[in-house]
Amino acid sequence: MPKGVAGGRRLVVGLMSGTSMDGVDAALVEIQGKADHIHVRLLNFFRAPFPGSLRRKLLELAAGCTTSTGEISQLNFLLGGLFADAALGACRRAGIAPRRLAVIGSHGQTIYHQGKPSYVRGRLIASTLQIAEAAVIAERTGVPVVSDFRTADMAAGGQGAPLVPIVDYLLLRQERKGVVALNLGGIANITVIPAGARPADVFGFDTGPGNMIVDGLVRHFTKGRKGYDEGGRWAERGKLIEPLLTRALAFPYFRRDPPKSAGREQFGSWFVKHYFLGRRNLRPQDLLRTATELTARSIRDALERFVFPKAKTHRLIVSGGGAHNRFLIRRLQEILRELPVNLSDNYGLPVDAKEAIAFAVLADRSLHGLAGNIPAVTGARRAVVLGKITRP
Image 1 (cartoon, one colour):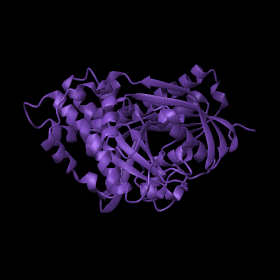
Image 2 (image 1 turned 135 degrees about the horizontal axis):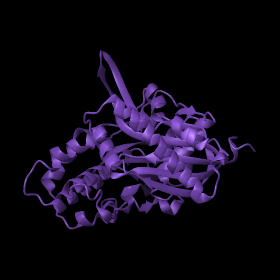
Image 3 (image 1 turned 180 degrees about the vertical axis):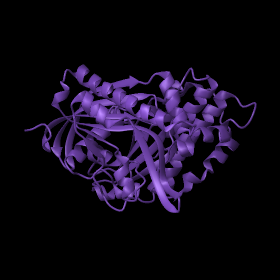
Image 4 (image 1 turned 90 degrees about the vertical axis):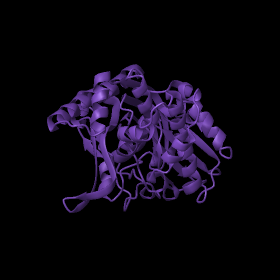
């Protein structure tokens, strides 16, 4: 079968750089089957870190720091080259020629996302911007690229995120047991897949901060020398500051009904400064302990408020960089005693690779004209084919 025919074996690379902005994740996968009945096998996972200076610049852009259109244009092409390097690296490590790929799916690097509309010159507008020029990736690799996944959903009235729930449904659904898939990236998001679900039964949303606040505090206290709390060891040594936790949990986003999506606009540097760095004489470990608890409690509260009343669930499957935070995982296990907590590794989806795998699957769906959003998740008026296709 030709390499791009639905149902036949095809090779796809998914590229992802999340809100941590620390590099590109590339997942080379083999996909078999078609429509909602596919099998995905990971052949290689490759992580290409960003240089420290580039990461700092991207974080500044996402925080709303002043820049020029020229600089954004240059970064768009620079990132396109780095994303292409990551795709080629995954192929090289697997011993597979890029020409054998059916498609590359590139999420790009989000530098702005506003899922909830606001008035712009008299019109209600929601918007998003991801950079990493797809034409550069296509030219460098010789492979068609699907990019700009969020915009079609937003044009249809959705929030453009989360987009992984359709992939969670395809790869994690079970006939007899309900599943909650939790991704712990910079932002934490969940997908709820009831037992025996169809796509229309699936729902999900961003619960709030995943690693974003903890990472921001670590960068602050180490003056940028470290970017995360390895294993949660620093937080584990601290004491919980209950008044601070209570105040942070009162942030309006947590009580807003789904569908909803979040990003640095809600939980970025301003949140860290306003809630965690506005008081003196608080120990770093105590602030990190409280920030970690904020992630755990906001996830639990979201499940209790928006999930458990609607769906019977039997297990929580965790992926993303936060899955390596042993202290955070332990806290989730302690406060979600009724819901066993497992890592996605146990289901054939390595925790670090899952989002890149997801964008490989989404690109495959787009190439074959299949919808990639779930309206109940994003709030879109209808299911739409995601992304724009750039051919070499």
